[in-house]
Length: 321
Image 1 (tube, one colour):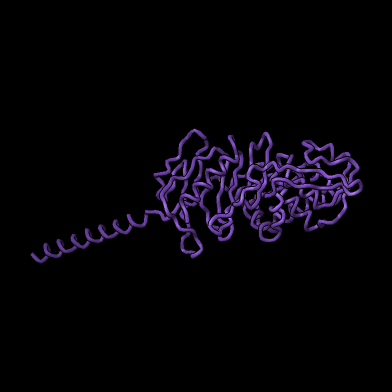
Image 2 (cartoon, one colour; image 1 turned 180 degrees about the horizontal axis):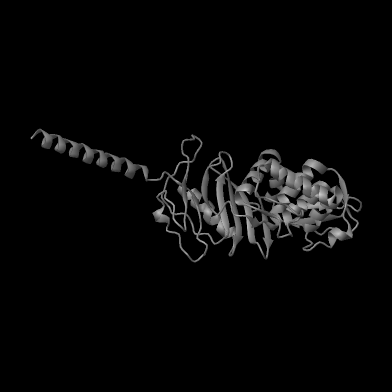
């Protein structure tokens, strides 16, 4: 009789314990926010956004955002993240590192003319803005000669940086590299990448024409954050719809019309375009929203990189305070 009583009591305790554990587990599986989405290999395989429950599958990985920081944005709606056709994408608050959206952000990719962000940074740090630089015929012969530079013309380094940031002039990048020394400039660029912790990044030329110039969205976040904090004038150039540079000797003015579609928008802080056939369309953009500097990176877009960027930005504005 006594044995049966204790057996019954033991059974009740076990069942109660299982019930409590299941209750706790079910609450712990509900995510606070989606931080990273790993894309399927095929663009045609849809991601079941509604199944984001913090668990890992073959085609999709979800990592929960750390919302303990007081600076983290507050979610105001459950709008589903947009579908982006690209090799990789990332949207992050540069001020606190909060990731709104992303997939394949550690995937190495040819960055094309996004390279010129690093070229401009090293040019400012190592050459300075007031150096007179003579543009050689070799530099003018560089593929994709935007910027209207003249062979034998003399230009301030700051004007060559303007040409790189406004119209993505490969001639200007080549001229800066010739002045400083091609190998020296590339060494400085890779050294800066290492110093910034851009461990998946490597540069082989200053323009981005080499498909070997590769990085990741996460690495580019580090570069963009450093430039915005230390050399914001580089991004400021890319905000202006129009700009002008001058050949020093003749005083000839060259008008530059910005190729970035976001230039002139009041909420656009700056950015850089990039394109190679192997890389498709790349775009790095920084916007100001709710006193936040929001970085959006698109790598390998198969459609319109500006449209894809706006999809993400509009989703952020719809979803977060």
